[in-house]
Each structure stands twice: as structure tokens, then as C-alpha cells.
Image (cartoon, rainbow, N blue to C red; front, side, top):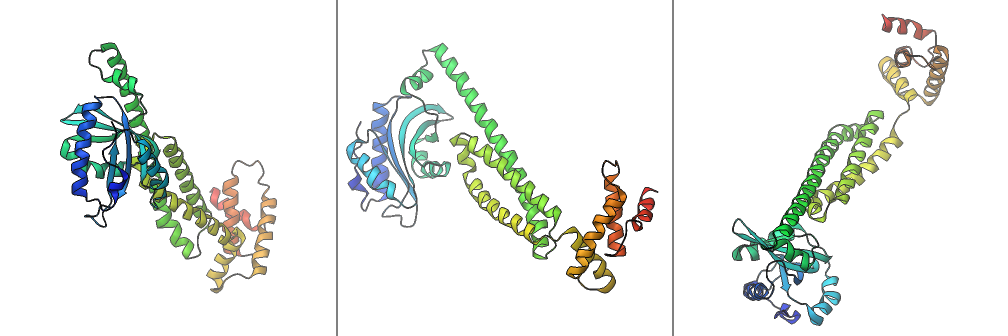
Length: 339
């Protein structure tokens, strides 16, 4: 079956005229290609018809494409700026709930669930067809799977289809779970880390939150890239949006690390802000840094079970006594914390 529609028809084509022609082509295809048998298709999924300016609606050709459409696809379709071209195989499938499945097997280009949803609304719904992306099935395998007389083959095909369905559902569930976790992590960063960074108060906790968010995105990305194209289609817009946010988060993490104050600076500033209502000088921060090293050596922390408690005693002493605190000053604080 060669398409009666040719590339020349695209110039000034009105949607109302095209739809009538397309329905006649579907009838020809149904007569020539019984359920399960494939022929070719070409689609411009965001085509603008002459009578529907500003609207993006799929233009579809079915049948053996031949030299004219093959040339058009290479020289015209692939030059479209929005990359909305695709070609592959199509076939009629089983009828479910009053709608016959119409399978698109993508071989080249881009075809998304959004494109098929629009095509369903403006083209297929009226003729009771259900467009969907299908597995890459050969003609013989497709016929065998749908032949009512081949009971054993049909049973094996049904089991195979059920297994494939369960696998897709599993991929979708995994993606949904990692997506929800990722959104939660990103929201936490937006609510907690970003305000602290703008106020110049983002520290170790902020860095940990950013790392957790980045790890969550990598998990989602791995699940997304490993999923079937049919599953990916349902998460494509979310992936692209969150990929952009992840890049911004990586930049934020670098900025937080760059602007993060040292522990000595934080402790010195906490002391002088409370005592003298001012920031610590560079010299006072340097003294605080040395005092911290001396106190850690004094307490001999290596291998001690209560290392965390002893470190807390050092930090509390530094914060309340100031840069010139000594290791001996930490004894009283440590004893009180034990009691």
C-alpha cells in the first residue's frame, strides 16, 4: 500500500481536508494489513495546518513511504527546528473496551506520549482507535501472538505480554518512588538551604542537604535512563525540569563550600558577637584555630569512646571563653556534661 498523500499536499493543507484523507488511508490500511501486520508511518507531531494557525497537531502518513516521503524525511523533516519528526512501523492490534489498539513502533526520531495524546484527541478517537507505542515486534511474531487458532502460541504470547507489562509497571513504580523522594529533597533545599545561603549562614548541614539532593537526582536519573522508552515518556517532562534544577543545585553546593566559614571563624564570631557585638578579626580567628588544636591535643581524643562528647566540650568552651581558652578550661565543661 503506497500512501495517496504525497509531500506536495503539505503546502496550505487544511486540517479538515487532511482528516478526511487520513481516515480513507486508515480504511485502506485496515483492508490491506489485518490485525498484527505492519506497514510504515511518518509523523510530524507538531504540524501547523493552514486553518489552525498557532496550534500544533500531528500530521501522519501510513503505508510504504517510497522515495518521495523518504527524501522528504531526510531533507525536510529532519531540518524542523522543534525536532518533531519520527518514522517507523504501525499495525492494528486487539480491541479492548470498544477501542482497537493502533500500535506505533518508533524506529527513528522522537515520538512522545504527549504527541499520541493529542493525536488521539483530534484524529483517532472519532474512529475508535487507541494509539500507543509498542514493543519492537516482527510481523510473524505479531501475527502468531494474535492468531486465535494458535492456542499454545497465544498462551505463550499472553504470558510474555503479561511479563512485559509487569516489568513496565515495576519500572514506573520505581521511577515514581525516586521522583517523590527527589522532589522532597529539592523542596527541603529550597526551604532551608537557599535562605541560609542568602543570609550567609549556610554551613555543614546545608552541604549535607545538597549532597543528599544530588544523590537523589542521580538515583532518579539512573532509573529513568534504564527504563523502557514507553515508561520514560510518562516522566520525560519531570526529568527535564528536575535535571535543570539539579544543575542549579550543583552550582549552589559549590557556592556554599566557597562561602562556608571555618569552625574557628564560627566560634570566634559567636563569642565576639555575644560579648562585644562585633565580628572577629582575622588574628582572633587564627588564635581560635590554634587554641582548638591545643585543646584537642590536651584531651588526647584518639581512640576514646566518648570522642564526640569531648569535642562538644571543647567547642562549648571556645564559644563561651573566647580565642584564648586552654585545654584545662575544657575540664570543667566536660565534667558537667558527664554529670
